[in-house]
Length: 186
Image 1 (cartoon, rainbow, N blue to C red):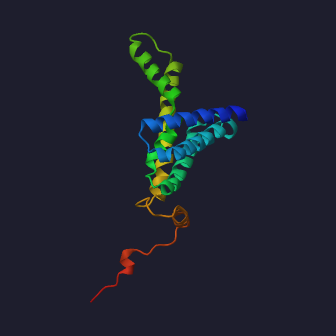
Image 2: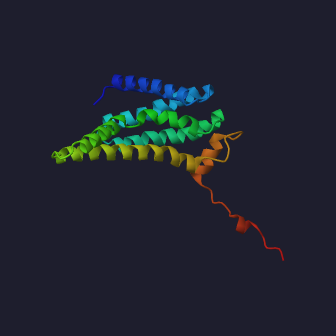
Image 3: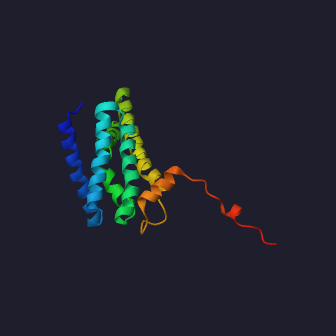
């Protein structure tokens, strides 16, 4: 279990990584503060959940962190008049499971190059576990970003009040379809 200071240090370095990828992806400079904030919040949620509530549950913690980034990304898209994908992708880059992916690729290479040698079944299970963990974490990250954008996003981020949009989308007033509104003309 990490101490509070260790978590703050991890979040600080996560912000540095996020800003580096924002520069690499040519994110507009006016959105760097949003990228840093979303990266800190997403990575912070993931790290705090893993170290306190969900020990070892990397997939669910990554989903929670990415969902926070996705929801706040839609909100801040209206504040800085930029599509949310521009700063949500760099914000979750630091949550990509590098260790699991590395262990999976190296394990697959060892399995392929083993030839006629007997391969330990526990090693095979470890390799498959690493590959499936990496795959499910990536699926959780993409779902956490995409679903809030699909459900909360509007046509354009220009000249829209994000508070009204969030209120309308979350309350879900019954909408009258075009068919019911149109009256038949005889």
